[in-house]
Amino acid sequence: MAPTVAVLGGGVAGLSAAHELVERGFDVGVYEARELFGGKARSFGVPGSGSGGRADLPAEHGFRFFPGFYRHLPDTMRRIPYIGRADGVAGNLVHATRALLAQAGGGNELIGVVRAPGSLEDISAVSRFLLGWATQVGIPAYEHALFVERLLTLLTSCDERRIEQWEQQSWWEFSGADRRSAAYGKFLADGLTRTLVAARAREMSARTGGLILLQLLFDLTRAGGRADRVLNAPTQEAWITPWIDHLQRRGVQLHAGAAVAGIEYANGRIAGVTVDRSGGAVERVSADFYVAALPVEQLRLLVTPELRRAEPALARLDRLVTRWMNGIMFYLDRDVPLVHGHAIYIDSEWALTSISQAQFWGERDLERYGDERVEGIFSVDVSEWERPGRRTGKVAAKCTPEEIRSEVWGQLQDHLNDGPTPVLADQNLMSWFLDPAIEFPNPTGATNLEPLLVNTAGSWADRPEARTRIANLFLASDFVRTHTDLATMEGANEAARRAVNAILAASGSPASMCNVWKLREPVIFAPARAVDRLRWRLFRRPVKPPLRVAPDGGVEPRGPVAAAMTAVARRAARR
Image (cartoon, rainbow, N blue to C red):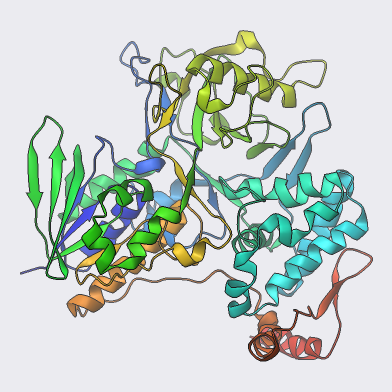
C-alpha cells in the first residue's frame, strides 16, 4: 500500500510537492483554503465583467516573471502536458526582450538584451553592459568600477564568508551607496534590485541581493541569454489549470475550500490535521507524512507551543518579515505595448513595476473577455505600501480602493507622459481591478490576506530546512532554505523538491531523488573561492578579487590567483 501524504496548501509549493510525490508512487492529498489552486501565482476573473458568453476579464495577484536563471520551475512545467506543446506548459513561456527604467520628469532608459561571444566573457560582458548603461544615467565611470568590484568580491568569496559576513550586511551597505552619488544609489544599488521582487536595497542581505542580481545580469549578457520570460496567456489558462488536470489524472486528490485550522502533535509526530471545509464542515485528516506548504504568516499561527518545543526552527518563523506586494489591473480601450518586457518606475513613491500583457498573449484574442471592448491590459505591482503618495498624501495601506487606483494611475502617468502625446490617457481607461487580497474594513486601514515574505539581512539563520525534527513533518514553502533564497515561484518549487527528497529518505523509498540545482556561477572563479576559504577560515582577512575593471569597462586579471583562473578557463574552453 502506497504511503499517504497530506500536502497543506495548494500554491506553487504544494502543487510542486504533489507533482513530485505522485510521480514517485505516493498517495497524495492537497488541502487548499481557496476555491482556486495556484496561490499567489493564480489568475482569476473580474466578477461580473464578462457578457455575451465571453469570459470575465483576467486578473491576478501580481504579474508573473520567469527569469532565465530559473531551473526548478521550468523543469516541472515541462512535465505538465499541454496540447500542441512538446515541452508541456513550458512551451507557453515567451521571451521579453527589453526592460524600461522610467523616471518621473526625466528621460526613460531601455535596457536591452545583449549577446556576449562566449561564457568566458561573461564577467567582462556584465561590466561593459553596466558601464554603457551607467554612463547614460549619469553615473561616473569610477563609480561603475566600484560597483563591479563589489560584484567581483561576492563572486570570489567562499560560501562560508558569504553566510557569515555578507549575509549579515544589507545590499545598500555592502554596495557603499551612502558614500556614492545619488544616481549610483538610485539606479545601481536600489533600482536594479527592484527586479528581484519585493526587495529593498536597505534591508535585503548583500549575499542574496548580489548573487541574484548577478544571475539576472548573466542572463542579460550571456550568449543566448534569456533574462526574462512571461506567459502567453492568463496564468490559469497557460499553466495552473493544465497542472491541476494533470495531477488529478495521476490520482492526486485536490481539496479546494479546505483551510487548515489545526495541527495535532503527539509522541514526536504529527497525529492529524483539522481542516475547515467551505460550508462549515470540519474534517480530521490523517496521513503517514505531512508537507506544510503554507505561507509563513499562516503557518506560524498554527504552530503550537508543543510544536515549537519539538522543532525550535518553527519558533524562529516569527522573526521572518513579510510585506505587501499586490497587483492592480488597468483595462484600456487601446493597446499600449510600452516596452517588450517589464517597466520599473524608478521614482515612484509606491515602487511600481508593470507589464503590458496583450503583446505577449498573441494566441489569446482579448475580445474573448469582458464585453469585447478591451484592447490593452496593464498589470501593475505595488511594492511599497508604507510611503505617502504625492496625490493623496497617504500611505497605500490607509487608502480606499479608489484612492489606490487614482494614485497608481497618476504615478504611472508621471513617469510615462513626458512627451507631447500622453502614453496613458484618462479617456482610454475603461475599468480597473484591485487584488482582492486587499480588504478594506471600516474604520481601520486595509488588511492584506496575502503578504509576501521579503529577504532581510541575517534572515538565513531563521529560515528552516525542509526536514524538521518532527519525524513526519516536512516544510515546502518559500521561507525554507534554498539556493534561490527569495520568495519566488522558483524558491517555492525548489523547497518542495527538498521536502520530497526528505520524505523519500525518511520512508526508505527506492524512487529517484528530485533534482536540486545550485545557482550557476562561472567555473573560472573556483580557484579564487578556494583561496578565499583559507583566508576566511585562518585569518578572517578581506577578499582580494583577482580581477580589476579595465578602462574599456571589461575586466582583467591581477595577482597570482589570476594565473590559476586562466588555467581553469583554458581547460573549460577545450571541453
